[in-house]
Length: 66
Image (cartoon, rainbow, N blue to C red; front, side, top):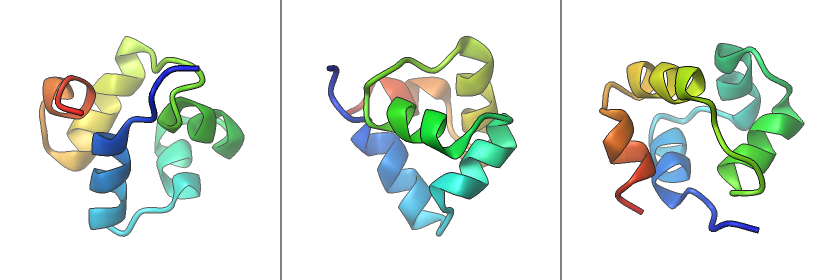
């Protein structure tokens, strides 16, 4: 198992978004999102880009600044 993405979780909590809400934005199941946020599986490039737009940050800020 990989490390959880603490940057992503921090952004999500800061914006008061639930995992269910972010999963809906990404058009994936909530359980799938949970596995990705917790480092079990990887996000796709398209998902990373959607997350960056949602949080108004660069993908680098989310995925490379843990």
